[in-house]
Length: 289
Ligand code: COA
Ligand code: MG
Image 1 (tube, protein in one colour):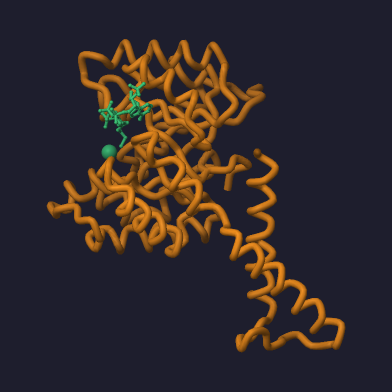
Image 2: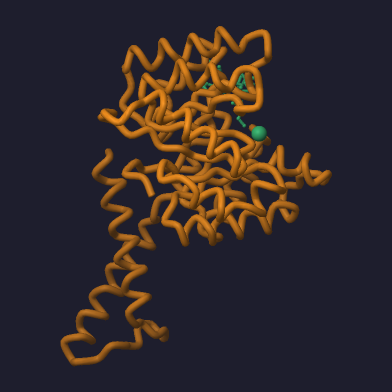
């Protein structure tokens, strides 16, 4: 799990100077400078130069993550060689599998040396049937990993299925990644919602992902950021309820009880701890503002 708050993470095609500038004005928790599939082969070099410049300038307050090209492409190694020495906060490794994470780690340490001051976290992008099935081995194979992202579009291609608004085709991937990531104490980031103008569909998709256990969601358009931030933050009602649960539990403890009934429901230790976690997350969000 990272120290960064990662509710919303905005992908920006690194070939577009216009969008790179625009991203500075957007209130996403993180920005993901993309070198991979949103950049055409003709623009790969220019996009990499833009990322290098962006990282050099260091004119940013939020977490900056770079999605490099896969290491079995002609661009992946060069991406690493130019970008790792500039210490971005994180790297997203697309189409990750056990081999590519091992290769990444080896190259990472050869480029960064042992005297590195700043940690660059690794976020494997799991978006193939192989990646989802091997997720536990992949994610426990490197100490650099502090989060994962699900990628549903490539996964649907790999499975030869259509993407739907309801997302039944990615239900297994979503649920298993949440269990595996939570077991390893990693942030777990949901796939982007690609229907740019369907804000109600986005809201439903976020609520579903949050209910399943995702900690945040990546997005591809600035108009999605506020909805994601809202849904991945505790609501006023949740905060007030958590406060009441904590008081009711404290009163019960004073009477020597470990469980108490509150509003017709039982409260015991795990319910208290959930309430405390929610308050802690809210404090983290408030402190960021
Ligand atoms: N990051 C930063 N700015 C963005 C943006 C993004 N991801 N997407 C759109 N914008 C900007 C546009 O440049 C435009 O700016 P302006 O108001 O200053 O002119 C504004 O937001 C509104 O954009 P809009 O006209 O609605 O969209 P578009 O047609 O310009 O772009 C996409 C649509 C899909 C091409 C664009 O959102 C995009 O490239 N998204 C990222 C794709 C990506 O990274 N995919 C890989 C990860 S899955
Ligand atoms: Mg992909």
